[in-house]
Every structure is written in C-alpha cells, then in structure tokens.
Image 1 (cartoon, rainbow, N blue to C red):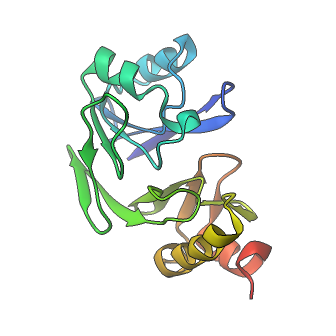
Image 2: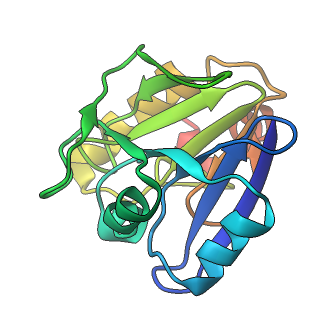
Length: 185
C-alpha cells in the first residue's frame, strides 16, 4: 500500500491518496478542494481515484468531492449525504473495499455528528477527530462525546498504528494515548 499526502492551502487540510503498491487506482481521503496541484499530485502517482472517503462533511474536507466524482467517476463514501451528490452512506464497523484495499469504518462523533475514521492498518485516517497532541474542536457538550469516541474507537487500537489527521503531522496511537493532554483524566 502506498500513501501520499497533499496539503491544501485552501482550508489548510491534508488530503491523502492511498493506492496499492505500483500503478493502478487510488482512494482519495478528504479532498478539501480540487485544484491543479491536486490533479498533478494524482497524475504524478498514476493513481486515479476510484473512491473518495470523507471523514466528515465540513467543506474543508469535502469541497472537492463533486469535482473528483465528475472527473474520475469516483464513488463517494460518507456517514452523511453530501449535498446534491450520490453518496454511499457508511456506518460504524462497515468495511469499504476498493480493489485490494479494505478500509474499516470507525464512527467517532463529537467533532461533528457524521465524523468517522478509516482504518487500513497500520494507518488510521482521522480527519478532525484526533491529531498530534489535540482533538477536534467541539462544543462543550460534544467534547465529552468526542473523548468517548476516541477512547473507545481509537485508543483501543495498537500503539504502532499511525494516525494520519486532517490537520497537522502524523502521530501514533501510542503517543496520543500517553501524551495527548486532551485525553487525560
């Protein structure tokens, strides 16, 4: 499996292109905005996306989904419908299979009601749920749900699994379990 990152200046979000080893097809996670640089990123890696996986439907993470669908014919997967787009609705525990890749859906409400993470070990794509040293912003009421989601769905995983967030650098489950002050009692 190959994973490449694309940092979108508009929205300051990270988009991930995942594919099998070698050429073939790609899976695009959280295409915040489609622009010439993202198209070039996809073309250079020869991984045209068959699927778009959205961690949640905030525009900074999904604004490019319609264009990706139109240009590449990619299927869109999300926990909530994306306005005016055919969307494959997903739920906790479901597997999304794209070619040889299988992504486990982990429901993690709190940042938004439709927040999910995608695990394809050893990687977990967390969107705005969990990032290095922090958790997604949420209202005070939603913060408890977010912390519960992270503890139950993410911190129960292996220490070595790599967290690939929607903002900021990668981290690991083990580092976040031990040092993320937002997850301490």
